[in-house]
Length: 203
Image (cartoon, rainbow, N blue to C red; front, side):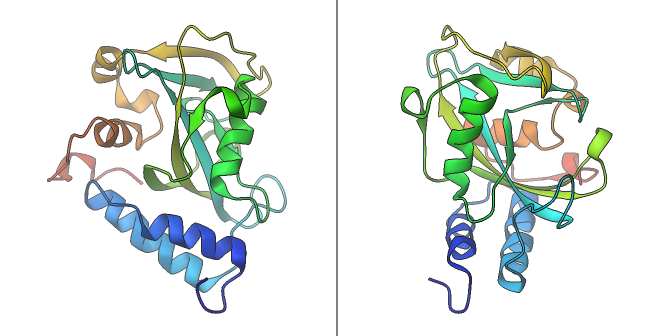
C-alpha cells in the first residue's frame, strides 16, 4: 500500500498508475489524478451533489463483443448520451461500483456480464446540466454484454437507452456524448491518438 495513504485510496492510486494513456489528454488526466490522490483521502462523494467538489465516478460501458456496438443512456441531468455509471461510495472499489451500477441502472446482475477489475480509461471532467459545477474523476470499465439481453432500465436516471453501432458513433455529433467519449472509443478499438490538437477545447 502507498505509504500513509488510506487503503481504499491506495487501491485507486494503483489502478490509475497502471493505466497506459492513449493520448496527451489521458496522460494529463492520469498525472492530475495521481497528484490529487496523493494529496487527500477525501475522494469519495459524501453528500449529494458535490461534497467534496471533486470525487470518483465509475463508468460501466456495455459493449457487445459480436458487433462492437455500445450501449449509451440519454441522461436526464446531463442532457447527454453517456455510459451508465455513478459515484463511487466511500471506500468502495471502483470495479465494484461499476458492477453495482450495472445492476442498479440496467438490471444486469454481476455474474451475467464480464466487468474487468481494471479500468481502460480515465478522465477528469467538469460536469454540465442540472448538477453542473463539480468535477468527476471517472474510471471507465467495459462490460461485455450481448445486445439482445433484456434490460431493466432506471427511469429516474435517464430517458432511454440505445445501442450505437461503430458507424453511428463515428457519424454522430461528438457534442451529443460525454466530451471524452470519442477518445475512449478510439482507445477501446486500438486507435492510438498521436496528436491531440483536435481535442484542445475539451475540459
